[in-house]
Image (cartoon, rainbow, N blue to C red):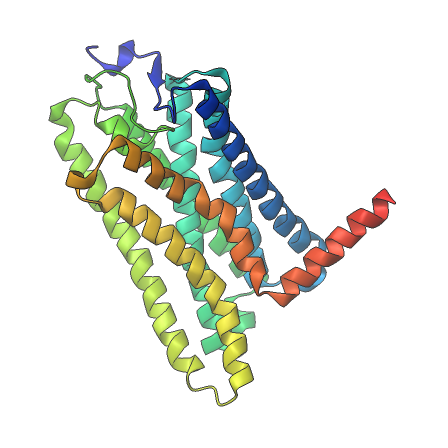
Length: 311
């Protein structure tokens, strides 16, 4: 295969060859996908319908749930369809769309998590300035900036990836179109472009990470000075879910993209891809609602309302 212009489709990595295992893969992914749809859907509906949750924290959480729904919908349904119909193919344009939306949603989520760290910093360290720094217009602008940055970042990656000539076949060793595995199919003369994009990505990722760390250093300093134990507990309960989500998001992504090549294998790459592409969007609603009394009350009210309509 001389170049990418002759490619009509890519062949994705199957989880299993045996029909029984393919159906098991379909069933597991279906359960995970339905759990993600239910969890994120409930959070979106509860926040949208409950006026008590119309605050900056829950506005950003609503955006996070929308991004989680989008990101898991980009990869999992196609993988389920391949398992169910015993196929591996994805069209060239479908692969490009999957790469774009995956990077768009995940990079926007990373930007949004950075904005959420700033929201926690303002709420705890400068509570008197919340109305000034975190007004409704400011929140909308920050959320829009997170979405826009994800769009531009994804566009840059997608155009760069699919403008590189592909000379090494059309088999992608992953269950969805992932850029590192597509780049393995490229010609050797594209090294400088790949290295340049990697440097840009690392700088942006490191910048967001440093901002989050510095925000939480300031938050921790202020929280430890709070005289009452109840006040400390309230501050920690506000921050811990966000920290847990950030840790899950960053740790899985870092391990996938920065692991030593010596420990790389198709089976390990497959498991790690599930960990960072499928698990966080499914667990995030659980993490945020586990110890959040306001959100749990809103969810209970929503469930009672739905039950009342069906009776």
